[in-house]
Amino acid sequence: DIFLFASGNDTGEDATLQGRITAIRALLQFLMLPLLGGAADVVGRKPILLLSYVSSALEFGLLAFFGTHLKFIWLTRCMSALMDASLTVPYAVIADLSKRAEPLDVKKSQRLLVHSNGLTGAAFGLSFIIGPALGGFLFSVFGLNGVFGCTAAVMGVCSIITFAFIREVGAVACL
Image 1 (cartoon, rainbow, N blue to C red):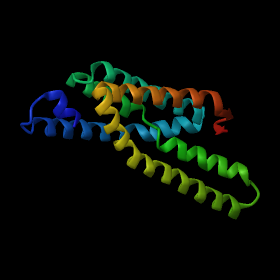
Image 2 (image 1 turned 120 degrees about the vertical axis):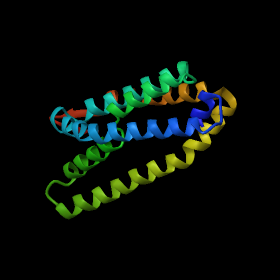
Image 3 (image 1 turned 45 degrees about the horizontal axis):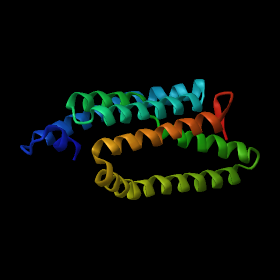
């Protein structure tokens, strides 16, 4: 637990802090996701995806250097919540691509959308299985800051891939 590690005590204070950060993060996401979704409809999916991935890379990069300081945990988690569209915008991209793949055949387009969303959901679910195991391994080898550094690197690679391989067509992203 990062809060126990950062606070250095086991008095229940870290659980309270974790609850506060989680609540504030959820509130910020609740307020910001509709705005980010609307922005993605206006300016396109790619800029919002890039903003989300770069902010996550920055968050975890800061945590890699200052991860044991509670102030930085607060700062980075709140910053990330303000710009986190990494789950909602990819589903919008999938919907856009499914409509473009079969624009005249609605039933085929709907089947493609369901299939694509199912694969994406499975990939996200698989990340919940692999992520903790990989994080535990990285922690045993590199420590907490190494885990954050590796996560920052992965998010940086996601940013580069998004920048290089997703192109905008109007306000709709296409691969």
